[in-house]
Length: 145
Image (cartoon, rainbow, N blue to C red; front, top):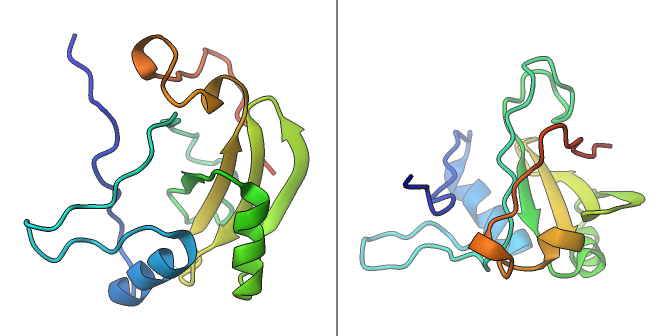
């Protein structure tokens, strides 16, 4: 069976798309979208990606009207949190250490939820396991705040 190779893009509506793209570039290091087909898009480091639909009434993302949340892998959560707080961006750090790592949450300027993840355990092995995929087991409980 053919499988997708990963996420090729994440597209969402914004009230001020140019300003929001600049915020993600300035504070999280996500490259601005290319302006032509000759420019390369942002490239991620290889690593695990969780693809998990949630119940329509889940409060995991915060606001009830928020249909999505993005999770970014980070190398050093403490350093990223320090960088963001130095820029006066509120970050909520989860002090519990989970088997799959450390987490923190923030929101972008338009209120969209962002989760930061410093991977541990099986998901820390950037694709070195068989097939290079980290997949959720049935019944796996995703951690939340």
